[in-house]
Amino acid sequence: MEFNKILKSERTKQGLSQSDLATKLHVARQTISKWETGESYPNLDVLLSISEILDIPTDVLLKGENNTVAETISKAVNKKTIYKRVAIISASIVGVCILGIAFLTFGRATQNIWIDRFNPFLPTRIGYAQIGEKHDIKENDRLVMDDAFGNGDYLKFSTGETHDGLYWAAVQHKGSYVSRAKLIKSSQLPLLMRDYSMGDDTDTSYMNYIDYKTNGPRNSWNPFN
Image 1 (cartoon, rainbow, N blue to C red):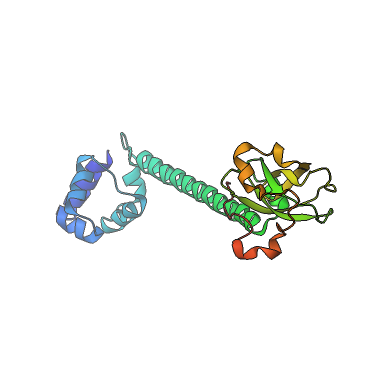
Image 2: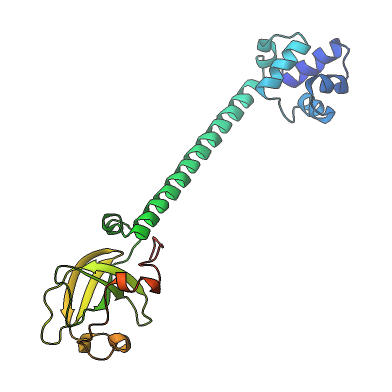
């Protein structure tokens, strides 16, 4: 016998109306009506409560010819399990992405060259820095401008000794990671960037970041730029 017919028959035998059963199960009367017409089925927890209230073994409610309630409940449970797994996987992916972005942001903020080097979102750029006639050959700490508007980061890089008007450096970098640095003349600068040449190439006033830190932060915190 089908579940809906069993439910209606046993409810009637117990002398319970749909409203009475609904009250005992803490559901709406319309829900009982849908169960008895086969429009829907109760979940497993409610099915156990029905078994207790009507004093019917769950086997009787679940089994029988054309009784699809067990299959329906099984599909519902499987669907919930799938949704739960999808939710867990999605939350895990979002969590990993947030942690990854936080890690890359930390790398940009602290100018960690190893993090920046392997940051898949950072583009490799060629910027330009004024060196001046006198500088530390081992390490420069200069503003490397990436565009004609003077945007860029203070980076640490090494060059050879300046000579013959080579008082600028072309710097290939990915965030704070500098892969190459080459001395050039101001005449080799992109045309729109020559306004930043500060006049005479031999001008030594363009000093390291420690002398210009009031100008703002060393670099961007943006892990994508």
